Amino acid sequence: MDISSEFLLKYNISGPRYTSYPPANFFNQGFTTSDYLSELGASNQQKPANISLYIHIPFCPQRCHFCGCSTVIAQRKMVVERYIQALKTEIKLVASLLDSSRKVTQIHWGGGTPNSISMSYIREIMDWIRQHFTLNESAEIAMECSPAYLDYKHIDQLADMGFNRISLGIQDFREDVLKVVNREAPRHPVKDIVDYLRSKGFRGINLDFIYGLPKQSLESFRSTMEQAIAIRPDRIVTFSYAHVPWVKAAQKQLETIGLPDSSDKMNMFLQATAQLTEAGYCPIGIDHFTLPDDDLTKAFKTKQLHRNFQGYCTRETTGQVYAFGASSITQLAGAYAQNYKDITKYMEKVEANGTALERGYKLSKEEQTVRAAINSIMCNGLLRWDELAGEYGLSVEELKKLLAYDPAKFDNFIADGLMQLDDQQIHLSEKGFLCARNIAMALDPALQTGDGVYSKTV
Ligand SMILES: C[S@@+](CC[C@H](N)C(=O)[O-])C[C@H]1O[C@@H](n2cnc3c(N)ncnc32)[C@H](O)[C@@H]1O
Ligand code: SF4
Image (cartoon, rainbow, N blue to C red):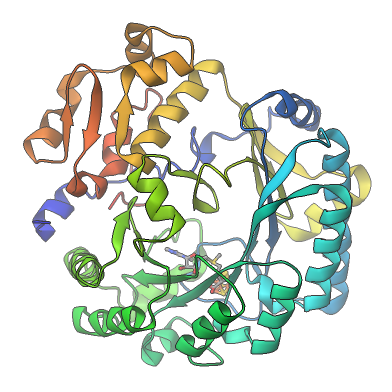
């Protein structure tokens, strides 16, 4: 790919990440608990019929200063225990509203650091899920883990509970980088952990990295990527550091240490892309790199890739997402529903009502269609007009009107070789994927822009 940092800077504007449509800043308190309960019931008649479960564990032993996730630090055992009971109450209530013939194809544990709590709590919840839902035989059961708190015996226990996929947050292999961002180094060599996970039957093993942190340089990030490639996990993710100090105050500390400038950051990404593709990894979506025989690569090659707040997934595992825990977001065909972020408030609400909805959003049929168009661009780099129109019972003309489609909005993208456009489809080039958020923005009829609303697009 022929990309310059000038090119990336040109497209580096503020914009939604489109992990949801409409973006989370549209969620509001006009969506009430009674709306939530009725949308849960309605989801039984909507597609996909598969169920994805998301369990949020908002605890970490210490705070990484770059962290954009929803988490609290070092909680007492009593609080964790109370939280686990609240999760069980929430799970039971939601399960009672869902059609018991629907199968669970995906369970994702995220955080925070789910592996920092006692494995006995994780087992308690997994047993509870099995009591209240029917799991598909090949369900993907995944956990986001920090290697600073991961021991071989934990891996044995997770495998025994049915977990088959792990994502490890590495961020950087350099100790000086980890130190300035207040992050513990892995407890065991990452290569040994990955080898051990493989020996236990885990697949789709993923390593997360972030570029754009203090102390990182082109040279240091090159060596971090070299080490990642030598380990050969199935998936490598290179996240662009999202600096949003107006939301995450702890990030301000990184400004005083000094962040790499935009051009250095772009070059780290370009260099990593070159290293990873050279080493045989396939770029999928925006920032994911996967081995050719990984499920996500296959889904991407056949234009069947999907995604939710938890990341990319295949058509087999994709379900409507029922989420549990503080800050978690339920993602249904017809609505989004987010729980209280504050864990005390979350627990109090669940203890009183069985649910802890703070805000949400009910999607109109039109918004569901826009969401499908944006997802199609973001995941598969493709929008086939007649296919999407047919799926939503519209004519192509009606679909274009709904998306406020204006071919002139794409002139620059086409001139820069990012996409092609004809009567049948919009098709992104490999280079175009880097700017998929920008292209999606041109199909978003309700776009809000302006600094301080969203992170940068590239
Ligand atoms: C919720 S964390 C879960 C993993 C686990 N807590 C850990 O840190 O190892 C998921 C991933 O989000 C990414 N992340 C966190 N904050 C970020 C930020 N501000 N910008 C970009 N990526 C971020 C990190 O790469 C992290 O591995
Ligand atoms: S361990 Fe993960 S979730 Fe916890 S503070 Fe660090 S990046 Fe955030």
